[in-house]
Image (cartoon, rainbow, N blue to C red; front, side, top):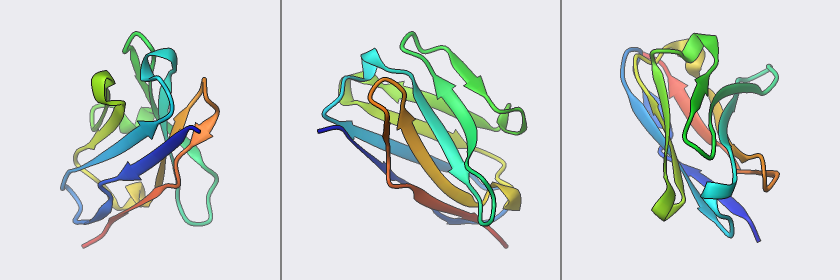
Length: 113
């Protein structure tokens, strides 16, 4: 059974950094592109960043230069390093596997002074 579990969320002040982790079980990271999405209150879920099987990365325009997606294949862990956080980054963040069609349960990130 495929399972994705996010961790590392919390409350931070504007301008601070936070790193999210997504730990996978029952899947092989090298077989799948992995993605981060987020959903703010009252808004639709939006794509944040992706990393392919060959570790190529892509970012949504508003995250470029601030967010970094990476993976630790030997341990099946996906990361999202978030710098210079803004209040509008407040959302529930989800990791997603394309190949396994699996989503994590989500983790809350709140950016507020």
